Image 1 (cartoon, helix red, strand yellow):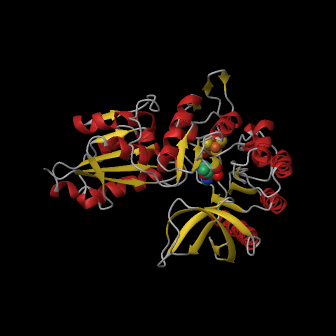
Image 2 (tube, protein in one colour):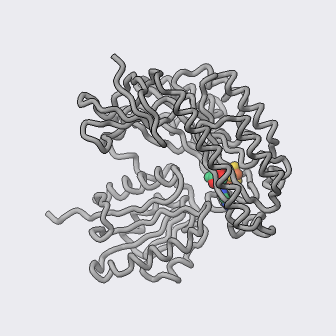
Length: 433
Ligand code: 5AD
Ligand code: SF4
């Protein structure tokens, strides 16, 4: 029998891309492709790209330049560009780099197998959700992502998502439930519901539209599913029902990623965020009232056009008030086609200095949140072996990575762990007996 064809996927960017890469691997698996982590062995290479912050397109072109010589060694090698850069640049990619055989935007992944058979084609803009083949029946890692919503209608002034991922679309509730049941049947115990603006979810249900809170309540009824998370949310879609769910639904984990972007009302307005710093703080208060130990995470941008020292201080003030358990922070980068890209930039040195100050504060808050876990008993879902012999790594309810050395542990075990130490980005502990 001939050797199976090999597929190499390089994934950039967000969890949505990680999920999409998995689905593309499964779709190509149905065509007989097996995964490889060596591009030089591959018969098909996909670069699943991200456009959100960096000079993504240039990175993709230079990576393509590096991959091109592989075509000389394997004339049957197919190279494809997928994801948001594919959506934004379109067929221009194939013109600039003839080694590329396929350009596929996020809405057209279901056409990937056909395109792989047929060769050159640009597939952009179509509904992808219901066309991909059902996931293969193979066993799965204990924690999985499940896309429930895509795209965004918010149009924050800095962001490319509404242009690259398109308008907000929610999957029908019953499809989501069916996919979740299938995941659980294959060993999944934790599901993270994904969407660029996931709490705007309003999928069609059997009795009218379902909110995200309703979807979570129904998912929680699935036996064998122990943990539910969702990401990423917009403050304005954080409705009462969803806040209440954090107090009422034990399977919903005490962790929320709720980006605020800035603590200055002037900048929030310029960003078209449509919420105030005070409004955000009130939301956090209500979430903590519903679930006192909830760990809050977020995203912040420094150096947005027009940001003064005073605006930046307001961001620092908000961060002190929230006390993030974990938070991402970025230096603003102009994305072509977005309204903010037309505005005068903050000098790079000023933005760099602000980012450093902000990150020092956030690192201190993260350290404090982790330290607070030491001595406590937490529940950990173990996912994979760690670096040390006999060590397993899992996630706590608060999404802390936890290392435990115990030869009896297996991936998929959910165990009580006593936390003994806090490191930079993880905790260590031992099984509580
Ligand atoms: N510059 C810097 N950060 C950005 N983000 C999105 N667009 C930009 C940009 N142009 C950040 C936001 C968002 C996260 C996913 O990426 O904080 O929440
Ligand atoms: Fe981008 Fe998020 Fe704003 Fe939507 S809500 S435009 S995805 S930053």
